[in-house]
Image (tube, rainbow over all chains, first blue to last red; front, top):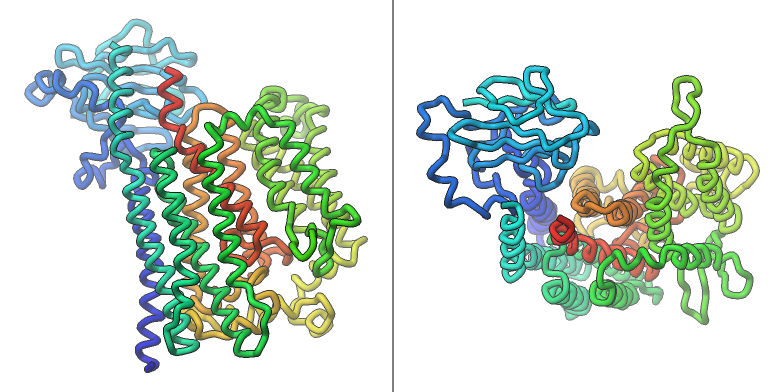
Length: 169
Length: 458
């Protein structure tokens, strides 16, 4: 066997080994870069990654109330402005966004000050209502603690523990 | 609303169980791993004996069939189990067998009859059968919680058994083996599983009192004095292992495992600081008092010193391993192209040096990346769970693999003093294969219940 052939076999083996590793990594990409929160960069490429076990439960009724026809007034995404996941955003493509430490929340906040089911955003009459779910440390809009559900306008900072986010058009 | 949402969510879960996406990914990756394993054997035959013979099938088929058996059992009993763990482990196991076979060929050329690859095949099959038994017979890992104290006794008994006179056996100065007839076994490998189960169960019941903050001293929140009791007990046991079995690695493995689990359970770094302080102090004292430990430390610090290089049990092996790695350079000499047989124990303790020589730095990083992926999957499995016992168990089991790999590979590459632990899944050695495959079986079993458990609770 010629040396050249052996050399090719040898290099090819290392290449194949790394292809194997990268095929495993491609499967867990969702784990590595976050599942539900889609970052600004990858958002355009991977819109379908915004999925959760709860998502397919009620897609049909949402469609009619989707915020798109509201003439740019309704928010289309939620952007995190402070905290661990700063700079990432979630599409507001359903009627209800749950927020909390629970794994199955739409926006998972890993923070000692957040409760398991901390708060939720609900779309009512093309306006997003923020409801605090009796959390221990509270939800703050413009630094005022939320008592009864209130309407959240685009650009108003919402804070839970160390994480702050706001709605964007 | 939420009730209907949940029932619909459960329906979807049931539907997705009919179509096990995880298992199809696993099958595809397994096929890839089988291909790589065959490639390794073919490359070895090509570059050493220049002909292909039936050996390829002998060393490839058994673990391929074993892995397929595990895959089918997972489809049958745990269809939502993690998809990536099995292919990664099969690849490492196959790579280990290929390298051991390659060293056997070198031995045959020297007219030696002391071969290891056949044994490794048999043990791999036994270990895979054990993993299947775990997946089939452990209904849910929570059932292990009932046997927390029994596992403590089993773990301690296994740990201490090599120190007993008649059945204990000393190999290369370490009292780590049990010998029954000609069969030798390292019970410490199985003890790590039993002790992980015990630590998880114990810490779940005690985490609240362990997390209670005691007095403040020099700006550090100290735990209450009586909560240090368990740490001291485990420290005493690991010292006993160090003195009684003359093995630094095993002792470090159990103590490190306990520290990590107590840290994960309480989230308080002070336990790690106190524990590491205790361990380092005792290790320094041991290095002063015990020639075995001081020899290892000296050989680690000055391996190229001729006094250590020529000494019996000195740094000869370590230095040969390093020369091998240097010979391998970046791209390696190719499987079958190097001379890893020059290193003593090249097929067991120094398999990573053999592989490093033949696959080079690029291949060495590939192996480390596969370990990292296996461990990351274990941590991921832990995060998926809502109950603390499962979290701790999964973290503990994956950390055993992490710490053991670190101690061995770090020892061979001179990051830490060399100790006699086995490289998980790669090294020749039945007890190690058996224990690590059981860990894989447990992690797969734990990962299967993860999704559904949350849903049942709500």
